[in-house]
Image 1 (cartoon, one colour):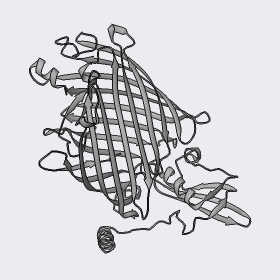
Image 2 (tube, rainbow, N blue to C red):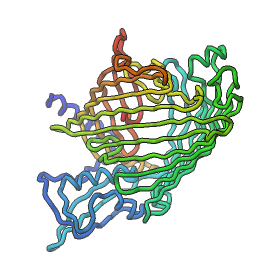
Image 3 (cartoon, helix red, strand yellow):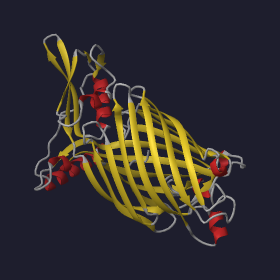
Image 4 (cartoon, rainbow, N blue to C red):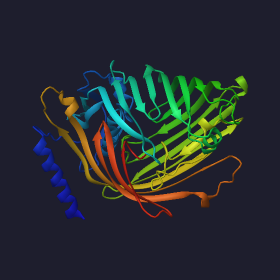
Length: 447
């Protein structure tokens, strides 16, 4: 196994040298011995745009604390998780009796026009395509201005802005969004009653207010107004109000705990989210609730092997729940091995267990090309092999949930990281009681 890994590693290095004018290896924050340091001061260098406090608030230490080398590595990954830098190094410098912790960063490129194509319905060849333009960190405060245009199946348009540090001293963040979505119905009963496919139209104005309690804990509130065009009262559930138009005010609260190291591809830590949203407030007889829960844990073992597991749950309850707000599997959430199986109900539960092992854990890659800034041609590369098992179920409120109703799948894959930008995954999954497996190609991270 070690021989095979070495071959893959050296092959990767050879490819990089063939296409690059320059490949630079960056000093790491990892030390052979897990030494202990007393922190006299912290010095940040390389952040020409980003404000110091955006970096400092990610740290789990401050002057006067004692830290170990492993703590510096963990904090390095937390800073890198901001997705603002192509490179981050954290290391101690000894000057006499004093220890200065240096945080050396390399600013990234903050305007990303990213084209995409996405299969919306995995049971058929229905695709959306478009461009997602993100302008990050334009005032050095980790702000995000985003515009998305998606055409084809389920056209979608979005403008969003978020400032996570409106009031830095009190940890207050604020966000707004405007969107339009023309979405095909996913409910089988609605399709049968209507006599075929139809689309709902969603016009949404949303806001987010959050309070950061510390590095790991955040509470937040959400609010929105939606104007939704439906086919009308053909059958209870086509709309929430019984009319062709739903005008829905939503208010919600939530709590987030996030102690992950590298959020893009975590090796250690816990992510836990719970959110409760009330929709309608009784206006036009609309009144129901949506509860979301998502828990993920990441634990390292020996020699780079990492185990992670997840359980997520979506529960709708209260008054009449419209078909367009049911819980669906087979779209954004799906069980690998059953990616083309569309399941529906008031609720869904989905769980995953995954193991990852590095073929190439980390390699700082840089290439000089004419006309392109080097921030765009620099990235942190990683290659990981994975093994996974998923299970899920969608069901209605009047149905009893039983573990035997879960459908499942398992498989193997390989993930290529190009950080801080994105990842691409190639996976082969076999569904329980299915005659053949399925190949899956996706961007982003499984969880």
